[in-house]
Length: 105
Length: 265
Image (cartoon, rainbow over all chains, first blue to last red):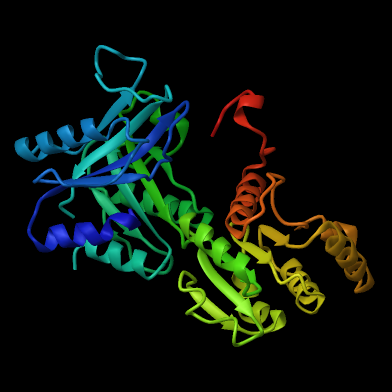
């Protein structure tokens, strides 16, 4: 989170809405520990990362959809085990749980 | 001031703080900020859950842990209360200050090690008694530079050093090494490494025995410093030292993963 502050400050000062995504759980092998964070603003700018690059693209899409539809904060899961539900997997074969939330606090 | 602004202020000031957020259950997204000795800011949407989770959050922060906790709808924590009742999941993220690396000796190896340590997120202090060598111009990456003898350094820094911190002694001069090792052993620092050739190492061990240090104490001292990866340059040596610090912390053997089995992380 610390490494996101400068960009978040800038976005907030410019009045841009943004979504914060944080790793809240991993199962099996995971590239980043709980607490790893990324943020996406309404223009699709991205800072930080939550995996080794495997799921960031999907997180951006989720985040933009969340801003567009004003949806509630929620946990999203990416993993290799459930091919039908999730199109995006982790190359390391683990499962990652992310909490996505518009930064309104 | 918003919760975010206060979080940013505390993180930049390296004030220990923890953020707790409801990730599942009523009030998902409700957030609070907790620091020792400060009133709780924000809340988790229910007074009882806020009260119980704030107490747990302080505990996690003190241990430097990040975790998810489960509560009943009224903040219950006992397993029997949680059976058959919808639970509230709270993600607690601790922001402890960065680990601290204290490097003795303002030499070429110091510059490379300080850079590698910054890459790993350490706050780096470079110490040397010689004013001409210990300068911010030579070590722009260091957070602090102390022109001081080891005794003075430990007097001010020693009580703050803990299991996540490291002391690296690169002076390879007994005038500095011996007091630096003695000082480091009096702290709770997690890693102590001392540079030198095998010959220097043998002489140093004799000298340390002479000043009354026992093998129990010396078991904490990694000397010669670093992993056996054939490092030659200051940069390679810095990697060898950082590799050893990580392996000591995780209790791993530092072999190639291709030669081992089992979990990687």
